[in-house]
Image (cartoon, rainbow, N blue to C red; front, side, top):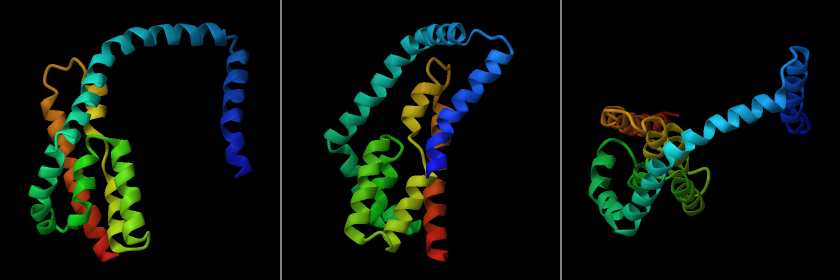
Length: 168
């Protein structure tokens, strides 16, 4: 653990020494890079804000719970336990919400249970599609295709993760 705690400071020190050897003005380069990030942040902020608001509305409206109940039989047919259906549906929208669901599943069923192992594999296999899409595809002419492909990949990853947990 001691080495891991020193890794980041040593990495920064190595970068500064390398830059000094090449006679790079480190602080000026950092300030220039930070100044270039501000216009990007200005362009991304509306998309990120919209995704966060829509995610909260999806949860607060009850639509998320209704969708979970409706899709649980389909998930069960695909080999995904109905107990982790909420995790499969929340993960593309909210990383923190998915973390809370994962912690709840591990507490309810035990960390060594099939449900918890499957939930951990599903959690690790997917990503927060809509948040990442807001960042990567902001201003893209047709963001629907990559978002749909990402959602399909999340679903396939969840099914395969549960299959692997059954086999192992």
